[in-house]
Image (cartoon, rainbow, N blue to C red; front, side, top):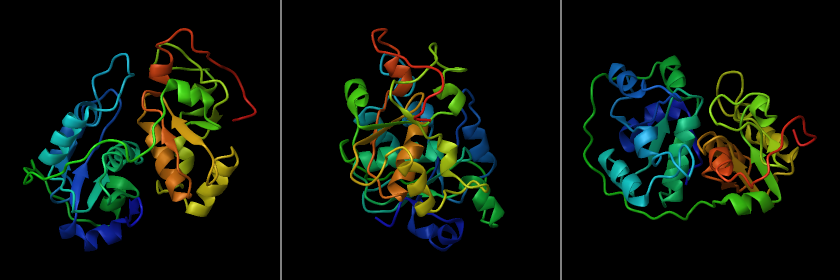
Length: 274
């Protein structure tokens, strides 16, 4: 492992040595494929979050983890191999890319990095742009889930430090634009994923991230888990915590799964944990 991030300059130097995945995505939109064909990093295969980085919405939440078979097949089609480094990027502040990073790591790939700053950083640094469809040579990726820690709803309710990665107004239950119930898991601390980034859309220095997460007790050796609306944005916090030297579990179903059981408690309003 060389760390979870790679800069645009370093990627330009290593372009021929890595497998590239374009995971551009917007919630409720299908602009990823046309955006990819209009311009992408040379050789990057497009991977769809809704169909390849998630299972079908249902009792497990809006973006449950894909089955191992579905994910493995998708990665092989995209050209991923076990022994070749992978770089993933998006244009959504690293949120979709963090989901792909987490899934590959979870399934045992040992060298996966997120392009820091994503597609905008690549363009800003004058990186080469390719257009049209990409048909990668299939890869030999194989693996099984279990390399990254996960928690279910019961474990999430008992974890020592539970972090909610959503925007503050969703955490407080003031608005809920996606799920049918507003609020948060009682006892959760709010560290919105956008706090992980600086004003230029890059991840903050690991020491700064360590200070941010230490404010809520998420320090090295602590029992930490992260959730969000459907398990996608939470991976962004997991990545930031790794940069800060903190191992954190993911609650894949997140809020969209928590609220499927009306017996589970819901908290709203301001919190000293925020």
